[in-house]
Image 1 (cartoon, rainbow, N blue to C red):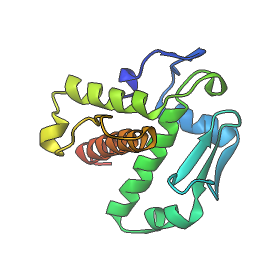
Image 2 (image 1 turned 180 degrees about the vertical axis):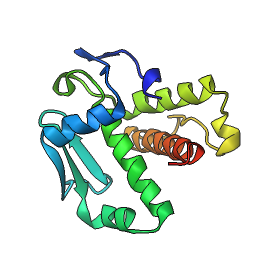
Image 3 (image 1 turned 135 degrees about the vertical axis):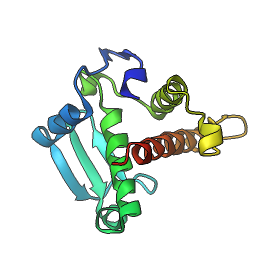
Length: 155
């Protein structure tokens, strides 16, 4: 899926390392924290300027400490946050939900996976949605595709 992200992102380009390399950039940068994300919608937020990821402690604890199916949600959440900042210079450009959803759709297509049949998942159509609703739908599409991919490779 990371290979399906566009190479150019505003004033920077796609990161050449792996997802684990990107994890280590945050771990060795600003770090991973729990606290308030200051958003009623976000379970986690990654600041591209400080390379800090903050997980909403109230809403993510059940994902980390719960059953294995809940822990998959924590994996999806982490992949989601790491994908946002999968650029060479995250403070100059990051991937938005539209970029991430398009990459997930493209990767699935390249692998011959029809998400509409496998998950009954259609790519979001913005008609009749506010920008915020559309962004949430794109985020959900990406997360569903990542969750499906994680189950397929049996993480």
